[in-house]
Image (cartoon, rainbow, N blue to C red; front, side, top):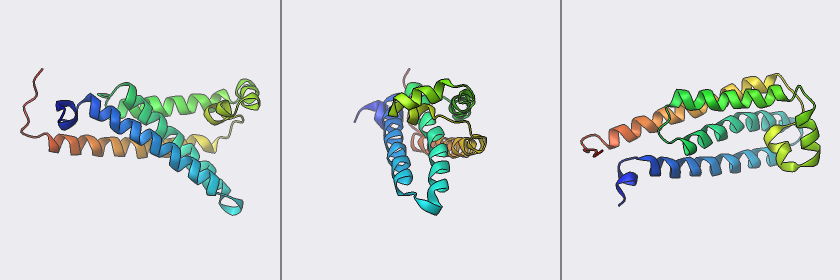
Length: 146
């Protein structure tokens, strides 16, 4: 087995981040598709939280040795920046022309979204800390060569 995979190195971290990103998108799309009528708000806010979880996974994918608090700060900062950008007409105009822009940028500012992004950030950070703790326990006694 590849040492990077066995020891929880950058390659295994990146593979896990890709899996987490794919799973997050699948869950988000499933929740949004299944949320109709009275549960529509649940689907919308779950999507907001999962947006930040996805960003957290992408940060880890780009920088596999990133600390959980740094990854969560970046993910939450980007989420909030995108939401505040919706105070301008630009995201709305781009969203009207592109489904991808609508998914990534949204179109209309909604203050409660800021809270739900923070919920997603907390979830992503907790999972990241747990995985780091698990990886540390798994590699106790393994000598790492530099």
